[in-house]
Length: 272
Image 1: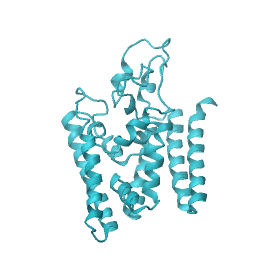
Image 2: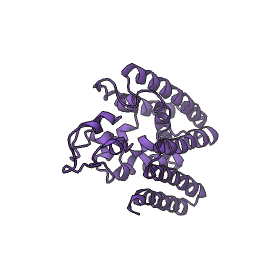
Image 3: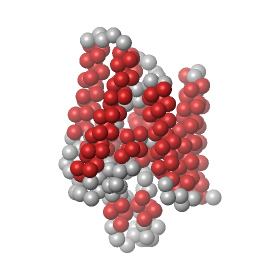
Image 4: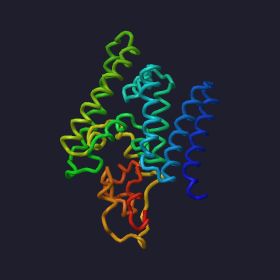
């Protein structure tokens, strides 16, 4: 039964969050929202335990489509970083603010960048592209993420400083336009650098939140040095090029592990 511990633990964590937010905010939406996400992620991990090839993709689609289509398009919640700044400035503790706090600020202390592997609706599309394993050396372009992060803050700040009317409607259209731009840029970069995750590595502004918090993540890939034969296969299959055989938190690309478990799946000795 040990193999079922992780999906069960994930479900319990999300259910606890769902109930706590429901009771403290007196809004049953949070009970549904976090219960659904928890069940989707736990189901994906359960499928992985059952050796289903596309387990992570199932979770990605279940969560990503829910957040993109239902929360974003139907409910008109800007779930991009601009929505976070908007609700933060207005002082409203709404879905986008709670989402960022749970998934991208405090969540990574537990799950690292699991969000990027199992829930991100941008990566959900990019992972369908052909370059699942990088075919070119990593570029030193990570600084671009800080520009896009700052640009999102400046954009929302400017709307408030200019006292623009109907900002909520602007946030909705910014969400739609932002997603289109992300997909276009992500697809172009994937083919240009032969790497599906190029957007995640160089452009995505959310990683400014995720990376520092992920350094302290409790749930992380570790290596049994006695079993490891240093074949290098784990690093070759890693979409984020993490040095997984090094158990130090300072290992190469340590804060970029998305818990996709490709390294675990492909290790010939079960060392991970």
